[in-house]
Image (tube, rainbow, N blue to C red; front, side, top):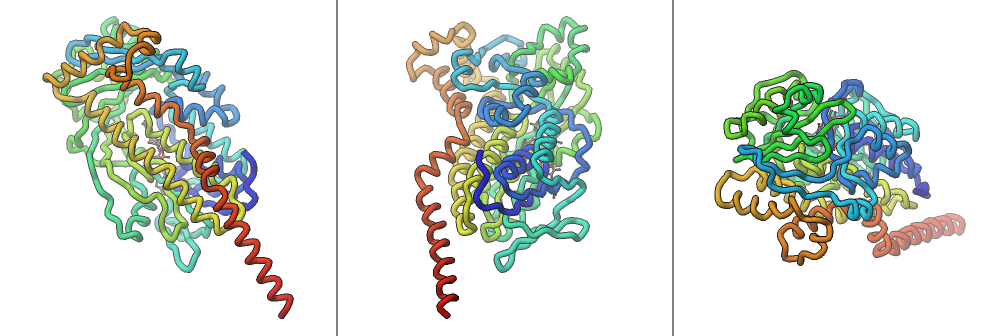
Amino acid sequence: MESAPLSLKFVIVGGSVAGLTSGYILRRAGHEVVILEKSDGKTKAGGSLRCPPNMTRILNEFPGMEALLRSQGTQCSGYGFTRADTLERIGFMKFHDEIMTELRAHFLVVQYDDLYSHLTSLCSGAGAVIKYESRVVDIKAAGGSTTVVLEDGSALSPDIVVAADGHNSIVRTIVAKDAEEDLESTHAVAGINISVPTEVIEQDPDLKSLCNYTELSIWMGSGSSVVGTLDKNAELFNFSLCCPESLGICESDWDEIRAKKRPLPFDLSGYDTRLQKLINMGSTCYPTVHQLHVQHEAVGLDGTVVLVGDAAHSILIHGSHNSAMAIEDAATLGRLFSRISTRNQIPMLLNAYQEIRHPRTKLMQEEEYQALSELSMQFGPVSEARDAALRPSLTMSFEDFQKAGSDNALVQIWEQYLVHFAYNAAEEVDNWWSMWGNSVVESKLAEDIKAVTIELETTVL
Ligand SMILES: Cc1cc2nc3c(=O)[nH]c(=O)nc-3n(C[C@H](O)[C@H](O)[C@H](O)COP(=O)(O)OP(=O)(O)OC[C@H]3O[C@@H](n4cnc5c(N)ncnc54)[C@H](O)[C@@H]3O)c2cc1C
């Protein structure tokens, strides 16, 4: 990516996946970047993130990332579906080699800490400034300038504020208040992260028979579901138990939930006893609840603040696309601002960001919730029909998929995955640019002409 002809000052609130990726790409495009992070940046988080091909493809372009993902990430061979009550294997949506080769990226599971530390060193290496223990408490916009206020009373005045401060974003609250927009809450989702050391699993034949380390294992219960993935680097099998209801768990931040092991708020009595045993072996138990909401505007405060990642949308955590959407947001914003040449292009580029990202993240939010609801549906005739539709996937080869018509239920499920996996954030920006780039260039011409006119007028006078 080339350096932008005009360098702007960006302040990024939040230094996690969205903030660091935005910081790195914007800095690489020649902008000044300061990242304000409320934590000390040293505490290990311990969880793992799913990294679908649309995310891996972006990350692979960063120096050293492909090697990191290859060595520390777990490559998933597909989604394996099992009944939580009987442990009957219901289906397997294989990530066929032919498709993954075409996609040029794999579906991986990576440790949050590995991704975080690599993104941090990329940012610092590129010259972005990361300030830890810097909690932002307010943003003010007046007379065309914006001020970011920190807890210690200090302030910064950038050209653009990027809000990457997560699900409980303070910046989003300020933007919504300014726009007099009420956040529309939709569903609440309770989830729990549990980790069991693979060493413990290996010693117990009951547990060993349950765990497939190469796939994304899904156990479908009545009212809840469990997804298990191997965290190769930490030698842990990680589970997330999810339920499309709040279960009375209070909403909290990632740093607050990591404090200690707590009792399970889920009723597992309907699960096979071996699965219950596995879940109860968990060395950690971090409950979270996400109140999903609909956020219409990703740009606010007189067009000086832009929201990215979980601050911009509530894609299901413990899902397959929460981090992917954050990385795509960052890649989109960074690529748009890699071409800026005059200040009057800022509104157009922020508008482009909104236009490109809003439909994509809105659809993803709906589909991820829908997928959780389908995996967690109460047992009965509808769940039986779901299982019957999935069963043929156990024996279907790639050729069978190719031959099956587009009205085949499994082909339709696959196509839905593929549309998301194939999404290319850079191409979306380039398409936007080929359609609207002329107006952006014209705005530069208009600004140049205005400058020349003012200069001539001054000379004549
Ligand atoms: C420590 C940690 C561990 C996580 N582990 C998992 C996991 O195991 N599985 C999973 O699915 N997702 C996990 N996530 C969430 C996942 O990172 C996000 O859902 C996704 O990657 C989008 O990232 P984000 O950067 O938008 O939000 P987040 O990752 O939530 O990051 C928000 C950042 O903003 C900072 N911040 C918040 N408020 C302020 C403020 N006022 N001033 C300055 N900084 C502020 C936070 O400290 C945090 O670093 C974790 C997040 C964190 C922070």
